[in-house]
Image (cartoon, rainbow, N blue to C red; front, top):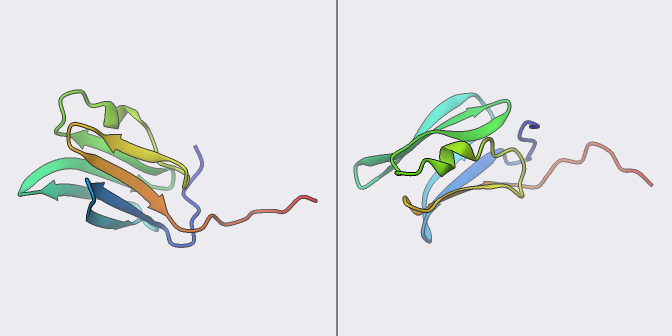
Length: 97
């Protein structure tokens, strides 16, 4: 998968309609998604994108979704009611006419 190439280099983590966290994707690190003092997920951010490395949900499907690597992708965890979306305008590498 390609690396994240957005001008804003951010992802937004939602639980229902509530924004839980805005994540900076411009450097490699880990983020915990916490709701009501409970860790719901651990995310890994690196040059490949963003992925869920650990989740408190029973089915772990969000861990199997792989990397969020472009703006049209989302990571969804139904049991935890979490949606993660990348935001920003995509950078254009080339224009073909």
